[in-house]
Image (cartoon, rainbow over all chains, first blue to last red; front, side, top):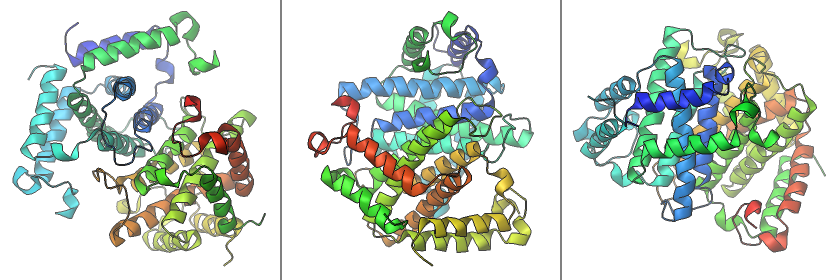
Length: 115
Length: 115
Length: 115
Length: 115
């Protein structure tokens, strides 16, 4: 399989269609689902305190699964709304370049509203 | 630009490197950030009641931005941990095929633990 | 037991202390935990489409558990930071009264930034 | 005002009723709102890395506001579903006492499913 977003999305949609699940996938419930999968990803780091990394094999294995779930629902939402992922991400980067000019934002983690 | 996940990820990483932000992007804070962006996406549907769609132009414009943010952080996390997005999503689909066999799951929205 | 927030919080803290769990309860991980429990509460409504209610006994039973978890972590966080729950909620209501004057906000669900 | 959960909830409900907002507060959108407020609370800790505390005055001021919002929606949800907060929290603690017996769980942060 090629490394294209389109091809990957088609694979996900085929999985869904084989189960007739499109009927449940309205935008509101898809947005809820992205949030829920993001929470499962975050759960891997619960109670880890100042250990902010992902060094153990076990942690990485869990991350793979939950990160994949986030991406699956995100790509489905994009697909259902007819969005071009490459375009929306590129547009957002352009916007971020204005909000966070490289010289001003260099090495700073604050929100642009704090500049 | 090609439609490849790799090329898109490189674009995102270049944006980050120009700002020297990698130092803040530990896995725990990236997982937090994916959750926060997912919440901003979900906020678009707050108080919408039984209107589960995304019919207005205004709604879709907001979705584009927030969905892009979710994808940006998800691709960054994958990049930082050296994960192959195509592979982890394909693996997750395979796993879901076992959990949700097409004949059993057809037209049903319950979790597999309810079967 | 009295219906006081203080008494309830003491009960929760006693549960924690009996397990020596305070060591894990830094503010960042508590904030993560509140988010995770909120996600479990939200999961009850995943794929419910335009059915926004909580009519079945089964749904209400689950809500009780997850809502309790949200409250437990929220009260723990308030306790650990020495916050007076009654005061911070009353303060927030006062602030909201300014942001959302009753006459202007009557029957409208938009954010105040939209007025 | 007394420190009772009931009195505090009545205050929140009075704020809502003065704005005729009950019409928007279905259980699904309330669950979404608790998640969104939990995310705003979590945002305070975004990019904080291994600094898991809440030592600055500024941080605590923000926490007060966002924690209050979480509690406001949680108490509204409980109110709307006729739940007794004291009871559901006490019940959940009892359940947790079974899942996490003090001797077994002492000083351990793992989920009970890992025991």
